[in-house]
Image (cartoon, rainbow, N blue to C red; front, side):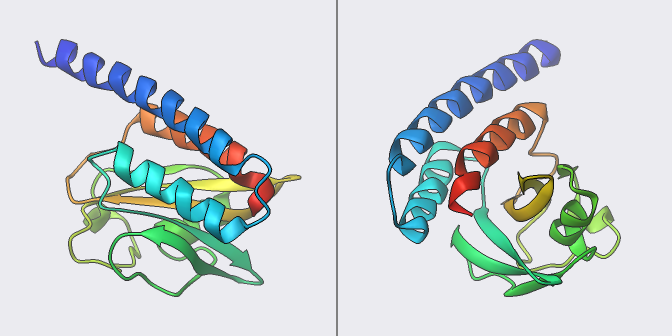
Length: 161
């Protein structure tokens, strides 16, 4: 029974991410205000997914990630390459899903409420230019549906970053 429920949740997430991707593409099309466009992207994601505690962007600036547009509680301003989940995803240039942030070596606790996290690199011409960071207050909140959906969103927003 649990497998059926789990598969149903994943299928529902896929539908929601597909709809969110369409909305994001529509919202940023022809927009010459990257900050406003990314603000709308984070609002769409935050409003669509109830398992999100925090969602935002960190941009690569030299050897650090700098806080950009987000929805949620105050966050860390800078994150070094290879540090925490965001810095590690940047250094590895790969999506990281962390079921329990307290078990991630070097996790940076910007919020004590965060229990799990997914970080998706935004890549341009083979280089990470930003990451999408999403936290949840539930353990093991993110799965392959989140990964696939957020990677599509990252590809759509890449021209803004």
